[in-house]
Image (cartoon, rainbow, N blue to C red; front, top):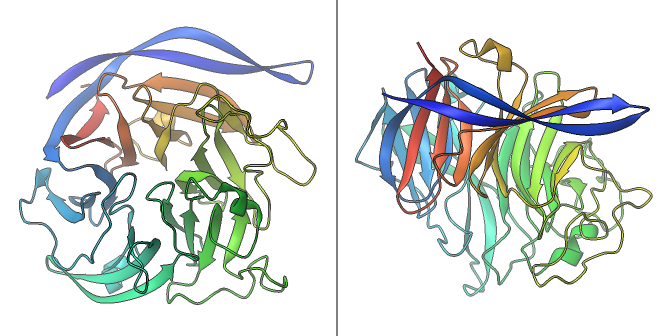
Length: 374
């Protein structure tokens, strides 16, 4: 096990005359140990624990892997459907059913070629039963509409609400950003389904003429983080363009503004919108300029780091670190940058024992366990 001495930049927010003022302070943290659990993973993207000692890991190239007692099984899980692995597309989220101990069902998100127009593709979400090391009894829950030409901005995060319904984030497809403001398509949306693929009848747009009834919120760009707290709050983060990454508190039926309002600009330097706010459009809890390219996100509730309980942890791809966020009364009051020595971090989850598991990005990806130094 390798010990790390990790430098932290701590950002604290102070209320001064009703304004939130960010204070930058240097801090240090030498109480973290790290251990490499697995190496040579092909673009690891998502992880999910299926027991105290076993987790599943997706590789964007199209394979689902199992890690048991800290050891990567060399044999991939069989039965994964065809996956489009191109640009930002690939096998994405793995999420276990809330009743996994009883039904052994897991959920996967991924793009795949369209059945009728194979030059186009759609975001898919399926459920399947994990039988030994094989996926069986597969059921399609969702295919995005309409199909797209691009292989970018899929979103593809999954999360379960307390009532057992499933949230799916669906990105704007990069070239289809104007569609994020329309309710007749899946670009730039968060969607809510029952686990059999049907639409809950209390969704906000069920009775709106012309709207897809599965839409739960809209005006998103590329939602790459999704956390649902025990008290029902839904936190989401998404990539901005050049600047303007956002952390949002999601409410059903609300419009989060993209691309009508944004704190970023186009990659060419051109203006996307002159507006950062508009009536009827939600403001983020926090935005980042320059971008940090937020990826996975988790809410910490473990015992190993009691001082971090209730914090959000965000994996950041640029320049490559982990962000710890404290929120109080819908205000971001603390941001800390840590674990910046591993490069691009694709995902972060909390293990049952309270340790943190990181996935680094790329062809030679690693899984790294972070524990309290003894």
